[in-house]
Length: 336
Ligand code: NAI
Image 1 (cartoon, protein in one colour):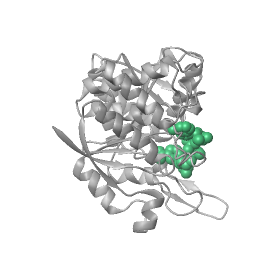
Image 2: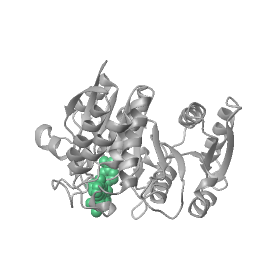
Image 3: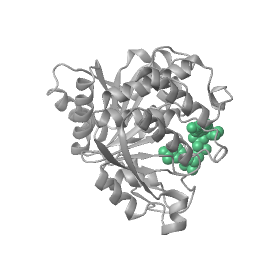
């Protein structure tokens, strides 16, 4: 079968890491035809906007996209193309699996966490105003519908992936109405999943616990801002944003992306590390049911990193993107 998916190359190192990833997915034996669509700086030149309609229409048609990082202009212009894509396509789950990588030494070993971040509400609702000069208010929107659908999605994931436990991360002790609504919704949805272990913990307790002993947690669900901060903290536990994957998923569409930025300092030099986006490619393959190919790509990537002979500069090696990609493709031959 040939899949038809959308390719959003993004800015900076985006074209380099997306090219590496699609070569590796092809080498894993999954036949994907990619429709390349414009975003970011290139789209501003060609279409006068960093997120043209044609890009969103393509994802609506193909249902699945692989996306490189997009530069966010600071202080002016479009707030964030990334946030706009999530909102336009109602991608309400930000999925961030965080797993120790063989050969990438970190303070804690065998970390294996999953963060589910509610992607459409909270302080990211974009509703800000200034009631009087010198004072600004931001509206933090929490709805029962959004709390329940992300909690349901997280429970399904825990059950389908054979995970152990789902923790709600909240601050209902202070935000009694908004986080209280999330807590009530979490408890109501939990009733429908009797074989998943549930717990609710205060966010301050969770961040302290994560840096001391991350393995006391398994899967964690939370509202938008907590998830933004906590998922980056978790990435730091296994080597940083350069090695963890991300996906934004809704009921109809899914966008798989690197969570690092466009790295303008190394863009165009062919030295970017594609590890994060390759791992997002693994999530994409699992999403479409190509589990065998997904496991093979993950094994090949991990075996190259574990051997440590071919590594990019950010991980202390001297290989360029192409050499690293070739090493993964060679390892795929032995794992296929
Ligand atoms: P960044 O992640 O682009 O770079 C931080 C540092 O990490 C730099 O030294 C960079 O060279 C390095 N780095 C990042 N990815 C790497 C990779 N794959 N291989 C090797 N080294 C890598 O963060 P920064 O500089 O804060 O952001 C640059 C731009 O990216 C900004 O406009 C920001 O808004 C945007 N951005 C976009 C994201 C997205 O599209 N999902 C996420 C984060 C930032």
